[in-house]
Structure formats: structure tokens, C-alpha cells
Amino acid sequence: MLFWLWGVVGLLFNAGTLFGLTGNIGVGTSAYLTATCLVWIGGMVLFGIGALLAHTDFDGERPIEGEYGDVRVTR
Image (tube, rainbow, N blue to C red; front, side, top):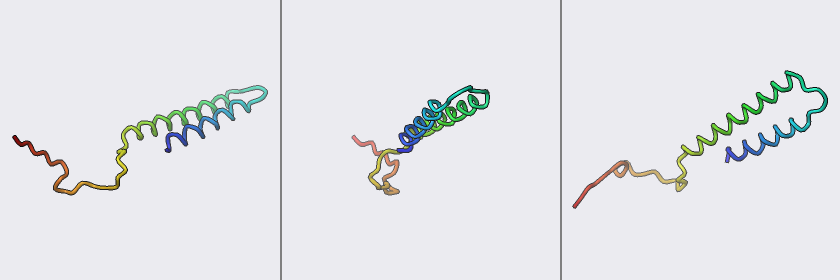
């Protein structure tokens, strides 16, 4: 959920800033745009990797201590 929220809000913010520019664009403005885009891309990578590594089983149950990691091989 955070991945999508960060992505949509950040994209709209960066697009609004970029399309709202008028007149001469100096070094300070381009540095500001670069910094905000890098923070946005870094957040997308962070939340994307976090979503891949997250445990997606939302049943709310934890395994009983005796059953956790128990492997039985029988014939």
C-alpha cells in the first residue's frame, strides 16, 4: 500500500513541479528537481524491495512452538 501511495503522490508532485516551471531555469531549480526525483526513486526502490521481502500471509496465526520448523521423514 505504501508503495502505491508513495508512487502516485510522488509522481504527481514531481510532474506538477516540472510542468509548473516558467521562465529561466537555473542551476538551483534543476538541482531541486533532481533531488526530489532521486528521493522519490529511492522511496520507490525501498518500498518495492520491502514489499517483495514482506510476509504476505495475513491470517493472523502464529505456528505453535512445537510445530515450527518440525520436519518428520517417515516411510
